[in-house]
Structure formats: structure tokens, C-alpha cells
Amino acid sequence: MIQATNVTKKFDKVLAVDNVSATIKNGNVFGLIGTNGAGKSTFLRMASGILKPDSGSIKIDNKEVFENIDVKSKFFYISDEQFFFVNCTPEDMKNYYTTVYKNFDIDRYKNLMKSFNLDEKRKIKTFSKGMKKQVSVICGVCSRADYLFCDETFDGLDPVVRQAVKSIFAQDIEERNLTPIIASHNLRELEDICDNIGLLHRGGMVLSKDLEELKLDLHKVQIVFKDGIPEDLFNKLHIMKTESRGSLNVFTIKGNGEHINSYLNSLQPIFFEMLPLSLEEIFIAETEEIGYDIKSLII
Image (cartoon, rainbow, N blue to C red; front, side, top):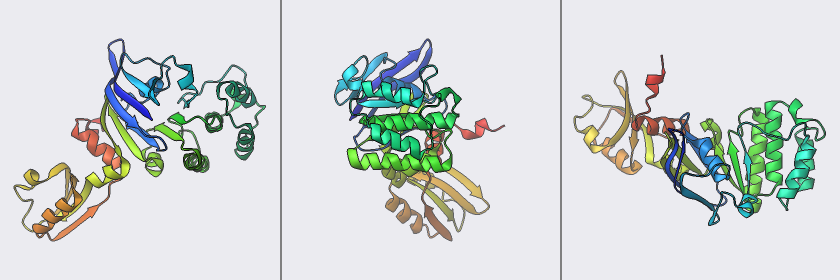
């Protein structure tokens, strides 16, 4: 388990991560989402011991991460920008990682390199961005580390490879309780694979919830009232967002679905339906409520 407690990190006067707390359970896929500059990459760098928090702590299996060699063998970090040794080949990286990760699976490494059609003796600097990501993913899963930190790992991968990587993650989660932590802007990708979601905004953790629980707590409602919107509607329900399309009203409402359904039906509307929200719609609704208005970004 990974436990972050009141973690804060500044770069000069820039507050990158602000008093963040989160619990990441073993065997779950934790998706880290957020606005640009929200602190996702900084959080992952602290979780991997590259950066030291200014205050607070990050522990893996109850042990501090920073400058702890034993703990660092428990995770593998795939950064957004790939870094490899100068003029190295995938085989060189494999040989290096076998010295760090004692259970590195060499046979699986060779099989995956072949499956992804990657030449392990070719210099990595000649690879495309997507190919470099593939090498990192292969080394990561073959390390047999308990935790896999992924910073925009799906970025640059074609659709077929993305699905292959998801399948590999799913296999390792089932077989050896792998825990991937994935920071991404691609919410559609995360929706397919994640069990839990952490939403960062301006360095702070806005929410950290089970994805299904999050979906059950937010609802899109389309409704047509007989005589216009009732005056006390906004006092009765937690309406986060409202749109009007002629007589059709579209609301994003937070709360218990049964209560919302019962109350709106009691108003005897002409038309009424509740729809599930996508992760992208949830992200927009939650960030707009705390002042990150997407409309202000559209010129």
C-alpha cells in the first residue's frame, strides 16, 4: 500500500503539490488526473523518491521512500520523457535492470520484445517515442516490481499497442497483485482500466474515490418541466451545472441517485431521464465547481 500524508512540494515560489493525502491500495489501478500544472508528475516523482517532499511523507508498505534503496526495488517508474543510458540498446537496459530487480523475468522480456517487434540490439536513440515507451513498459512489467508508476504512459502508443499494454497490466494485476499508478490527460483511457481516481487541482487533491462510487454520486439529468424550472429546485438538490436547450434542461447533479430520481419524479415533469456521466464529464464538473471554468479557456 502507498500512503501519502499531507505532502507538499515547492519549486522556488511555485507550489507544485499542496498538502496532498491519498491511499493507494494493492492490486488496484489508481488513475491520477488533473488540470495542467496540477502536480501529477511532481507527485509521482516524490512517490518514486526522485524528489523529497518539503513536508509530509510518502510511504510504500509503511516505509519512507526517499533515499531508501530497499523500497525503491518495489516499484518501477516510467516517466513521461524517456531516459536511457547514452547509446544503449534494450538489451543493455535489461542487463542493468536485472541488477536492480532481483526477480527480473528475462524470458518474459525476450518474449514481449519479440511480440512488440522490437530489436533488443538496436540503439534506443533510433527508436520512435512510442517504441521507447514500449521498451519502458516491457522492462517495467518484467521487473516484477509491486508498483508501476506511469506518467502519460499511453501517450504516443497506437491503439493496438495501448490495448496490448492494458492486457499486460490486467494479467499482472490478476496473477501477482500488481498496482499501477497512472497519471494521464487521456481520461477515456483511464476510464477503461482504473479502479480508483485521484483528482489534483492547483497542487491539491480535490477528491480520491473509487471510480464506480464516483459515478454513482454524480448524475446527468435531462428534464422538461410543465411550467418552467421550480423556484426551490436549487435548494432541494446539489446542482453543479445547468444548461438549457429550449424547454429541455440538462443538469449535472451530485447526490444519492434514488433521492434525485424520487424528487424530480414528484414534480411530474413532461420528460425526465437520468444518464451516467463519463470520466471526462465528471472531471469537468468537479473542476468547474472549484473555479476552473472551461469556458474561460475558449477564445
